Image (tube, rainbow, N blue to C red; front, top):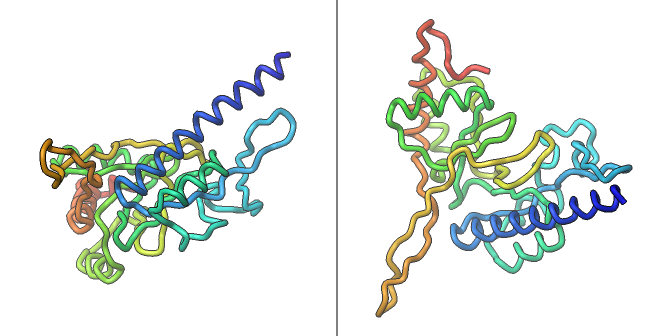
Length: 240
């Protein structure tokens, strides 16, 4: 009886989690026009129905278990509501992936400890931040779209950048909340700002939800380099 009750409870939690992921995917795709697709997810373990931390791609050495495209591939990312509903209706626990670049947000990411230090320092500096995604291993700061050419110019202009910094631009992807991956739960450390603007219809003023505000990559990169170089001992605040 206890095993049956436990199975029912896990089923209810799975349904709620699936609904949350579908809702999040639809918000990204339709309200914000962010192209999304489902991640490969985690493989189910035998026995008592607990979730294995292994990736469903079956690669025992997968570097990002559960949190990468597989089938469909990254090029299938879309803002089409019908496709999004079909994906998460059939795979309700699939992680939510954002295809970065193009017209979609990009991101800069740091190891979790360095990311927490960076946010504290950027807040002290008065830097306005956009959404921040946190996983147990890395924190990602979303920025406005940029091209690889512009990123190259920005990096060339810097004397030095933190070695722990990664860039998620055109042709990349980022796992979004409320996903679960092999490293644990994905959450918003800084939730997207709910931006609205007046509608264009006549009569009553209709409020339309717009995409969350995103900082410019150049301004954020400059601030991160400054924050990293401000350690009292001359070292980097944003090291591992």
